[in-house]
Picture 1 (cartoon, rainbow, N blue to C red):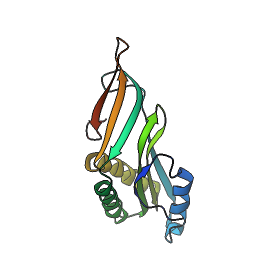
Picture 2: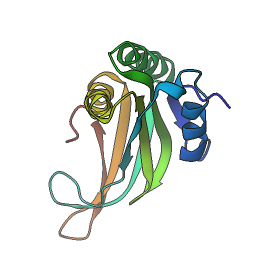
Picture 3: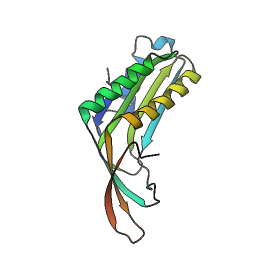
Picture 4: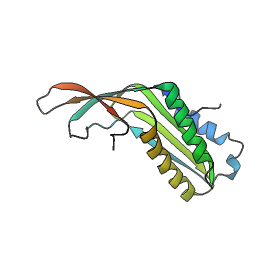
Length: 152
């Protein structure tokens, strides 16, 4: 099964399918490590308010293009075997997976460096938007749109 990097609806792909896709890469025999970053919904906002849920949307066509470009750039780095970034969109509860970044590399040090760069780049470059539903200290719930660029 080939899984393309990009934006996917919640529930449309699994980490096991992505790993199978990585391992089916014709160059996987050169790999000595796989690194995985899984971004999840945090239960507290940057301001310390309780997060109830997140809604994620994307300018899908542009996000897919950017995520593919990032993966393509990083696959050209020394030691890289495969790089995939899969960002989910939809409505998410606390603790649910939002993004999978997977790097297969010749050695673990290659994987760690490329994985970190992949995460930093998708957060800065991909047009993915979050609507946070938060409850303040008075118990009132409101929603706020934030971008990946603002998230730490």
